[in-house]
Image (cartoon, rainbow, N blue to C red; front, side, top):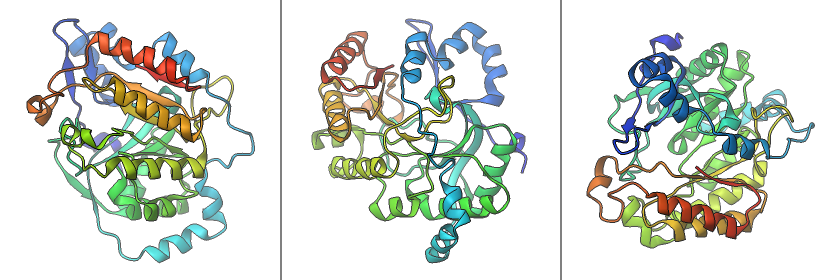
Amino acid sequence: MDLDREPLAISVVEHDDTGRVSFSDVPDRLIPALVEAFGEERVARAIHPSDPERAFWMSLPVMPKRTPWPRFKKLFKNGELEKRVRSIGEVRPAPYFMTAINLSDEPVLGKTGVVYFVCKKGCHFCQYRDFEEHTVDPEGLARRMLALQAGGADNVQFLSPTAYTKAIVVAIYLAAQRGFSLPIVHKSEGEDSPEDLALLDGLVDVYVPDAKFMSPDWSARIGLPATYPARMQACIQEMYRQVGPLTRRAEDSILHGSGVLVRHLLMPHGVPEMREVLTFVKSIDERLPAHIMTGYEPLHDAANVEGIDRPVTPGEIHAATQAARKVNLEFSIVR
């Protein structure tokens, strides 16, 4: 398949008070158009890590040399992956809207080839909304994986994959039969079921789960059920059991990590909740890294939800930085 013929979509927010511009994701093919629209300096500031950010990613430990890479190859060679696929049975096509090679929000992932699934969970502020929806079966996923590899991606990332695990497992098998050899990144909302995680065990190199909130009181504000925190905690603990904390692959590179990276979006009035997230992460392993994102925007329904109807303030970002230091997690960044 030809990636250049895939649809492209991007969310753009301009900040009138600061002149800053931010993007949901940055497909490689769109960078020239973004530079033309917003200027090279503004785009560079939005998509490239600052010196402190780069120092954070470079501080991650180096992956042990004997770590399987990518992990799915072992299960493919010994026949376990084929057995797993045969046990799945019929798989329905998955809703998705885009496939593209991006500069990752997490520089440790490098140029990541992303397959964007349609998330049906309903967070009020979801940026991946209102894009034209298509469907893709495991064969179509496999073709996209191979196209991303041919296009120079460092890895293949499945975004919002939680409801589509069976299709992904079959696609990995089909792609492996045709020479696919990139590591797999799984970026989810952080509530994958034990059954789905069992299917993924040994196939995923990097898990990037969200930890959206710890207190059920945040349920109505976020737009997820009050049962989310318990499911999220069990999910992240199992992901950690499978691959451990995030590492880098080489001492002179921030690319090709393996392990778990937990992400949390700082919300308005959300510093105490962020502190609880970091405390939970530390309870699993103080080496488990956490990325606190500060670019929240009240998109879509969130503009009408009391308490999250504004961006976070500079004061809240400063307070979050101070709170993160007090939790004393070994690897955390507030960006």
